[in-house]
Length: 93
Image (cartoon, rainbow, N blue to C red):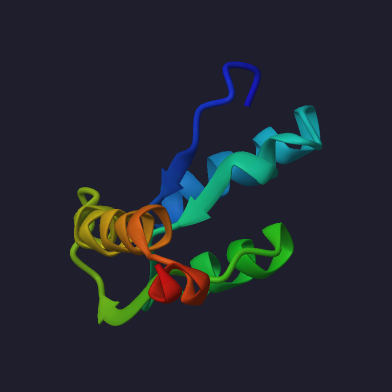
């Protein structure tokens, strides 16, 4: 957060670390996104405590950042749509 760098959380361990991080730096969660919803109940608890809604909910329990890796194309697509989408006013030109 200090470097103004977004972080994509993935799974139980990163969410547990994020809970500690939020205690140490209360503004840090503004820079965090949740890649996916794990099947682990503790991750759901952590996401709720952090006020984060996951990008994907595929019922994954694979670990190793697999949910975050799958969320990246969704984030890139959203950025492209927002960055390149024309306005209705552009149709009159």
